[in-house]
Length: 91
Image: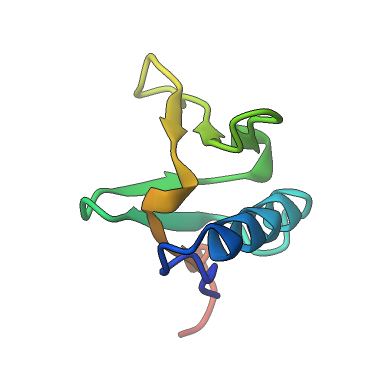
């Protein structure tokens, strides 16, 4: 599942963030991995671990046990969102 945020167009980014908001509304596809334009990758284990900021539309990822700070991601830097396999799922 790719988010469709690959382009620089503002329309594409807005449409992509709506997709991210819909994704966060359901635990069905989690965990997911977010790839940024820098090449950094971040895993969101459950939709409760992230939200879209209502004003800036940044994706906010909340820290897990290993990290101390939340991460705010500008949607223009999200190049891919893909589901990760859960333990026990077949390839």
